[in-house]
Image (cartoon, rainbow, N blue to C red; front, top):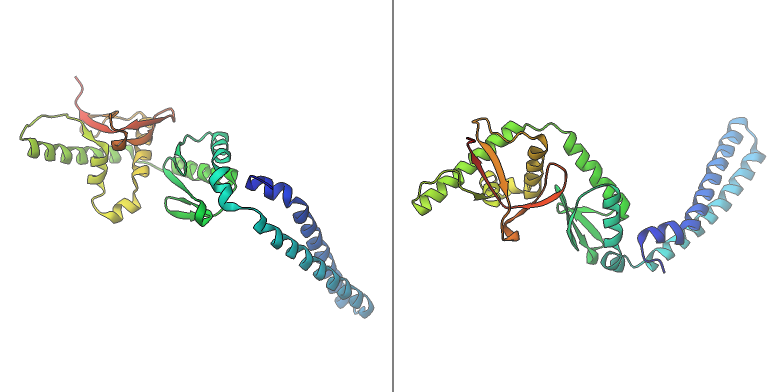
Length: 264
């Protein structure tokens, strides 16, 4: 029995696909013969072509039934539980995509992929995706990320929004501690929550996309906000408070705190 979906489709069902394709091509040719006989008024040729078409219909039905009987022999749930992970990780590596993974959840920034064996599907940011060949899924993610990278991104506008949210969090800290200290570190997740105070905003702008925008800032090398303050990003001891962010070189980092400061 095939262990992977690729083996099942490309080996176990290969001959069935080939035979079905050949039957289809033969039917296309017979349809041409039917049309030609009708156009030319050759009733004998038309009768022969229709008889051949009927034979091919029976053959096609037989092939289709054979395929339908074989499909349940592949245990898709077991495949997703036991064999999907390795193939998917290899496919991501082939596409040069960095991933933070702990099966069944994968962070391929800015997308979160979740495997749901019991439902025989995967989700990408909670959207159902049923193309389950690892290479196809990895290729889809690569194209989606390439489109995001190619899209325009206003680094200064994002830095301004980030600085405003940072100042809001600093004001909250000062109000809470009664200590007025500037340029203190604040949690990135708190800044993200300030940027997206409503649940609908968080759905439209998930934390992974926020992390991806931080990556685009790092990649641009433009770290100074419009008011001249410079962005600094740092690690945090508690990984639960961190976001997975790609650095300027595309390597995964766990970053949890940030601040804006004035140089000099």
